[in-house]
Length: 100
Image (cartoon, rainbow, N blue to C red; front, side):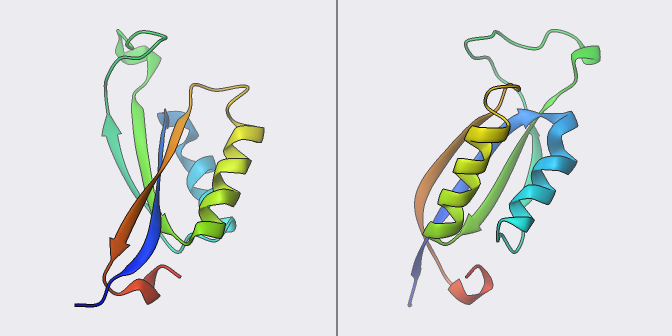
């Protein structure tokens, strides 16, 4: 079985940012993404009511260069203004051509 090294970019953000973030990751080179609702608690505490909205997790599998571009974009445009967390994981995928 032949695998290909790729990067998994994971973004945790306020749900109202979903359209902007998904549009950005596609424009920066991602071929697709997955979105799910998540909850938890961090240094700003937990969201305690529905009117505060929910958090989402956006995941996309991309080559190294695209991962770097996404992270730089998030750092510049989102980190100073929104409660956004992002990280990169090294992964191995089958059918790597789907993501390159």
